[in-house]
Image (cartoon, rainbow, N blue to C red; front, top):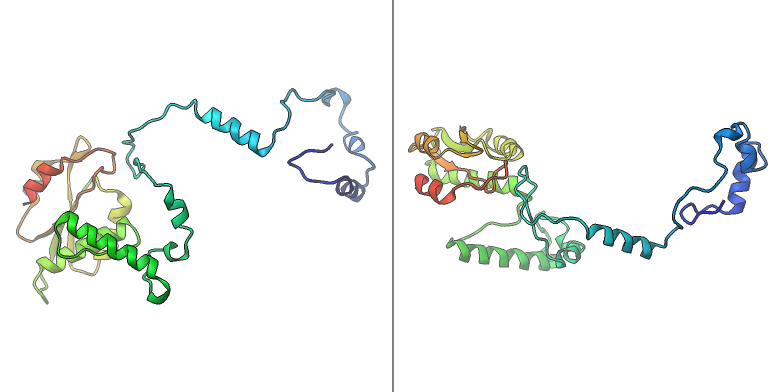
Length: 235
């Protein structure tokens, strides 16, 4: 029996049958009672080409109801990925965010990093902006360490306090704890209320030795934090 998705030739099938000591596929099934064997073809539609099959699934997918807003949380947020990204990520200079040690062969990504830093600095009114970090967890940890160094006097042995909400992604919290383990940093949780940071709890935790306060928006539970209120409290 030939099948378009099982590319065996007649010679292949004959060879396999000989290897197991039978002359035909029917003889291979001879031990099965005739009452247990299907004596007619399955009621299946005819086989399709790749193009036909792709078109079928495309039409089936069009019947799905789209959800335009996602507040699932746990990192499953709504993201828009421009079509050009699929092309750019195939270029060798954009394979990884790893530091391009050979600038003569990394002009593409160096230019992109420079433009990103420039635009971010202008957008947020900053004198400088860092880039080329691996992921969000790494970026968070580096930002926290920057705040700790800025807050704590040089050579000071005083412990810095870091306020981290219970609504932060646990993966981010784990990386943050690893990064700050040997930096004399005390991480204190900000209690949540109804799935978001409790402003009153945040205000009660703020002290002069607080080096940084971490927010995630949307948070791990998929809720939007009231950033204007929280920022006003921290200021």
